[in-house]
Image 1 (cartoon, rainbow, N blue to C red):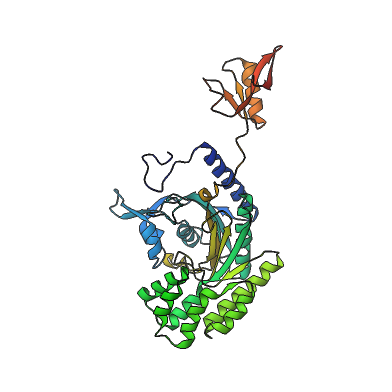
Image 2 (spheres, rainbow, N blue to C red):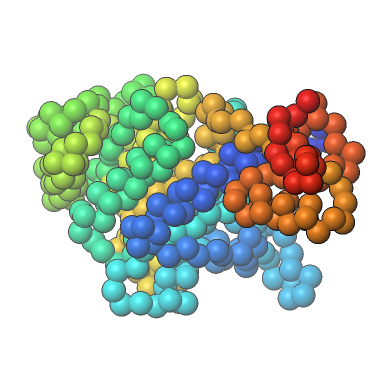
Length: 381
């Protein structure tokens, strides 16, 4: 009954899940800080033009709109935090060197990303601005995998693609928005029948290239196969070179990966590498990331950018340790009692003052009792 009187795909966060969310959030943000990431907290609501990147109709559809009663301007509830972080990097911090930023907060979407998804995800992520080198992508992937390890996610599978391959061939085909979007969707769904229909009038090299993308899935050998199957376009060669460099860097660090050259992101602001993490027991990716080098262009400052994000709420299905049992203390104004309670709490113990506690409803296994003139912790009778 957690959705009682709430909108579809919206739910309350109850005590155990809330504790789990906060524990993961703290651990991940501490991890990011150790890598040099500074935390930012953008507002939940902004003028809608600041919440959307250029020509991102997918994000536009997911964004709730409302009217600002003070100005009459259209505002939006954020559906993704990355455009907000790009705005902060571009206009508020305005640094010249590499900037590492992290964030954690709720977003709200008009529609769920899947049948089991929530329309109010708890998004957390880390982003690097100002570095075009493959080292930034390697760091983002390392941090993403470390975040999932902290959350207790097992059997993680890393899959890597590059949206530049699709974009290069779509540009060569001179596809405009409508047919480009149809082909994009067909590739996401690996729908060869639709792809065949859309590409039937293209030159052989382009048609064969589009039809080869969904079949380019597997280990590093996929990249060699792609060089023979995809058209010899400069942007295609450049994208495959980037994937080769990334593969070598990840292998050096002992990170296993698979390549899926038809792996396309859900947001249009990605411009290059894309990487997703999948795990047993989850129906969709548990974390997503990639390159979005032009994400700040709308804000007047286009810088290289890469990063990742994940929804903490999607991870709360993982078994989590139960509440640490508390100590039940009597109510009173005795100075020694108050001192004992303060000392226990300062040592990290949870102490609940008895204001009418039902011990069957809370996690209590000890009590604070006055024994021989001293306040002592004893097993709960």
